Image (cartoon, rainbow, N blue to C red):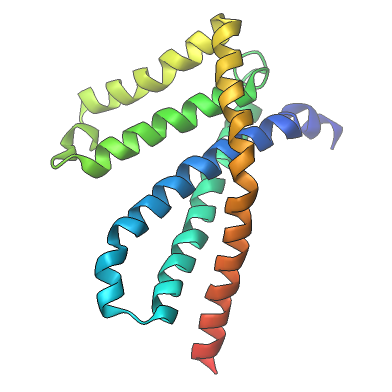
Length: 179
């Protein structure tokens, strides 16, 4: 147990990575649902529209947990000096860069550059590796990345409260439909 605890990043660092992941994923999800809301209002009842928002929030919560968990596992596998020592800064960089690639893939009419071609793999790898290298080599860059993660904590709690409400609505809809 003690050995496992030494492999894990500090709780505060892990929470900061979770925070920036929650804010980025939830903001993106809510923006996309709101973009579709005018069309949904025309064909769905209020209860169905609440269901769309609730399922979106529940899935955003699931998505928000995936990347931080993967980064914690990665930090356990890599030497501490590579990733764990500045976990919040490294995690914030990975979350922001992968979010940027997700936006590119979402809005790109031809996302073939991201679909397994060598150039896409090289671009994605470099775009993640370069910020990590700067964070590792320059303490000022690490402070900026950590600061972004710390600022994200302000929005984390409202999003998590919305997630709880969304999960309750999803459960209510499923129980009402099963009865």
